[in-house]
Image (cartoon, rainbow, N blue to C red; front, side, top):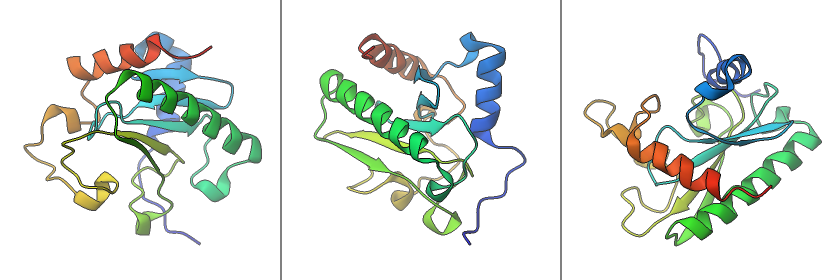
Amino acid sequence: MLTLPTVESCYFCDLIVDLIADPGECWNLLAEDDLTLTLLNGRQYETGQSVVVPRRHAATLMDLRSEEMSAIMVASQRLARVLESRFDVDGILLYQNNGEGSGQEVPHFHLHIVPRQAGSDWGLGPPHIARFEQEGRPARFDVAQATDEKLATVERIRNDWPE
């Protein structure tokens, strides 16, 4: 059995509860459907980096139901198409961590969709391979900070989201 990160509460479940209570308060919500949320990642290692999460709490890939897996991939493909059309991308990276041993930080399944751009400062792999110092990082790496650049990125993606 995988060792999962220990947290006081699940970040994504808390976000979902907050979204239900006040839909306008989720600054980084890009799209949603009955089974998933698509969110701009608060850490922008690459402009447009986002995650797709199931609404139901499922800690890892192994905890997902078939219909959730399908919905996650459909949302990921929609996002990838928008990123490809709106950003100058060299490629699109999908990655997902299961358990502490893989670098999972939040014990709620989330698939990262990352538009790769020329001049990236973290090589060819996911950002956890090239960890940044926690202190003194630019605001774009602060998951809780809604910068003007992040808000503009949310708008660019939302405007092209297919119905």
